[in-house]
Amino acid sequence: MLWGAPFTPTPPLNGLALPPTYTPYPSPTPGPTPLVVLPLPGSPTPGMPPTRALSGGGGETAIIPQQTPTATLPPVNTAGPMDVYRSQGGDTLNIIANRFGLAASQLIASIILPPADVLLPVGTLLLVPKPDPQEVRTPGERLIPDSEIVYGPSTIDFDTAAYIAAENGYLSQYKEYTLSRGWLTGAEAIERIAIENSLNPRILLAIIEWESHWVRGSPQHLAAEDYPLGYIDYHYRGLFRQLMWAAGTLSEGYYGWRSGMLTTITFKDGSTIRLNPHLNAGTAALQYYFAQTHSRAEWEQIVSPTGFAMLYAEMFGSYLARAQAFEPTLPDGLRQPELSLPFERGKIWAFTGGPHSAWERRGALAALDFAPGSTVGGCSKSDLWVLAPAPGTVVRVEEGVVVLDLDGDGDERTGWAILFLHIATQGRAKLGAMLQRDDKIGYPSCEGGVATGTHVHIARKYNGEWILADGPIPFDLEGWISRNGEAPYKGTLTKGDTVIEASTSGSFETRIIREKK
Picture (tube, rainbow, N blue to C red):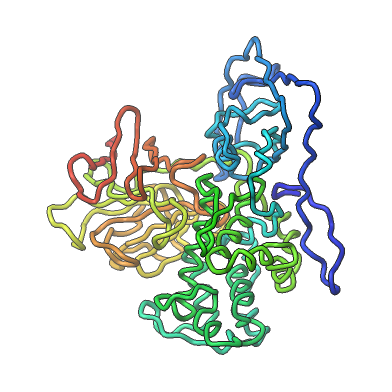
């Protein structure tokens, strides 16, 4: 199974095949204290050549030097019951350890392991100390693959408008006026939220149908009519605002789990439960989402194999087959392509924010902000250009937005893509333009989204998944590496011994200059 766990078939119910159910690997039977001899993390396999090549995912190959073999490997005591974990795309030892509530040093494998903050090969088997039997966890069934959450390759053949029209429910006749976009049909609202937040429109449609029956029928009461995604708050009344809230909540769950920072969920009554560490990011996102909108008793039914996952399979067919074709979303050996600082050499800019959310205010901490040097504050016009950090094709141009596709296929849902936000209309790169490194993207501005000062917001995606700016594949701009701070927007860029702390003040300490050749 490509997305990380073995499954066993479940008998059909009422003629519908249930999604397969997660079956944990058996734990070793307790007995005499075993000793397992393991390599030290970062040590090479005896007999391997001194270097190995890893694909960069963007047409480039990185040569990774191997360390000198370790002469003597210490035994590791595995006394006590152990669990078995199979690594998934995006996993590192540190991330896995956080989910289990352990130190990375407590994870055991029979192969050479990379450093604790480096991506593990998908499918790596680890022995993990079993938790306290009294600890309560969420169900461990992996119900929804990661590729069904993100706006990636599996969405290419899906036509949202055609699907909604064919179902002929309340949603097919719905229209809503929005301040930012004017009149939108239901399909247009879903597509807009899906594209901007990089979320799969299928998952949004399924949540709407589960909560309000808008897709295949009609709402049965006023709450379902006003709050079609289940979040009852007057400030989020209507489809578009409900979708905005849902996108932020799904993204918090998905990327919180991906980063290893989200380990518990809190229900509306204030009670908490630890997320099962064997989950995938897609399932964790749904468990997190429905905890915000339902009681614990309702939630337990929704996240069971006969709950939401059954409806999803009924609506969209064999999503596990799609997962086999498109996962892992973050493949082995993934590396960021070489990216330059996105501005001209010798010009003064400031690092004003990041890492922070890639879109809106909640979600993946994937974006960095840079402001051009200026003697005038606020949303003033700038004559400094934002430049392409790598060769690519402009595949989306909208108000304030330019998306650069780096893999040459013309689709931002596959491979590497770079989002630029707050690009001025005047001088902006044209749709379809094929740019080389340092070609002009446009001028920074306040256009597109919320901004209090002229700047550019930049974020990366791979196969539709936002890539965390401080994660296993950190943002690397000519050797400037991003790290999270004590809060979103309050992070750092580091190159050698130089550290720049983000600040909207644009002070001398925040300035960053791309060196002249």
